[in-house]
Image (cartoon, rainbow over all chains, first blue to last red; front, side, top):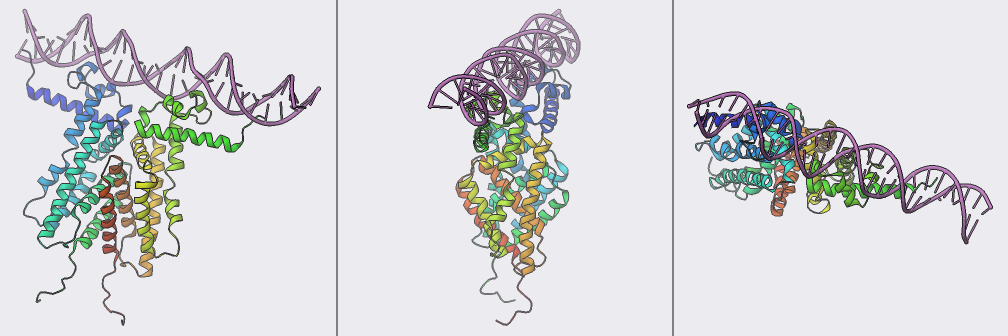
Length: 210
Length: 210
DNA sequence: GTAAAATGAGTGAACGCTCACTTTTTATTT
DNA sequence: AAATAAAAAGTGAGCGTTCACTCATTTTAC
């Protein structure tokens, strides 16, 4: 059994995914050829088909493994000991730094995926799940703040969360097309100010003794 | 000179564009074939090429004629007699109603265009111009409000404008993939509340005599 | 030695675009 | 008003190319 160790096999699979991501980001999904991916990864075309059954399956795997982690990621990076407001602010910061520093290309991958959405129901479902997951988490943070009395009582948690997620993806869109860096920083600041201004509870009618 | 009247020729050109838009929305740009567009428009393939030199030129024309009008449109629909705040609020409403009622498919066209962005510099430039135009107009509204004393003096006009435009396109993205209608309405409300909360000038230190 | 892994030329289908040809429209002549 | 000519509008089979995927064969790892 000249089988290769499972670790080796997995690392080669990841190499193919890396190459595919590069190619998809450079040319988009439709224009990327299997030959491109094979050349970039150093494999032959035939070898690719021992790891993935179809070209579209490579794209789906990329989405599943590298794009659907958003919700878990936020959950992990915001600690329980923070106040809801600190967690919210941290989410915004995580997003900004991810866009600028950590994974600047992931945004473009998202964009390619969006384009495919129209043609592929599976991709669409994956993105919808991602949207729902992010909203759910952010909304839960807002609700915690309301219950703790930090935020106004009538704050619409779901709407706030949907706004933040939409804003994030809108920014990703423009960022991936070359929006200047300076916008991003100011947008972060103003977003936090707007959030705070909205969430701040109205001055209490009966002021507790100072 | 058996030329047909210019009006007829233009209406046939528009018919081709209509058909192309339908097809692009249904299958995306790359998967749409020239045959598809020909069939849908009722012309033969050859006839199409008397109106547009290439398939990609059809897409570019759609962008130019049906997607780049955003800035002018907002300018026209917000009257000079309104306060800056009323104009801003109206811009948000125009966007929402356009998405839900007037041109629900234009959003999806934008999405297809975004996808092509990676491959076509011309498309990219068109979208960048659109972004810049929208921001410029919204920012000018904010600046007017600041000068009139309606808004806080340190409001960051450009950042607010960029946030609104990004948010709009982010919403368009999710909308085109099937976000429930109810979100849209609540997001409109909360967006306006957040805007107002941010722009409201802090209570004046020296209250003018009531 | 052997079985899994990898190769890459080959296959058939699909697509953007062309061009030799037909049809339609208008201007002119009778 | 009818006949004619000229030119633009429209047609669609076909061309050249590209691409996802296959499979007979070779290489590699144990």
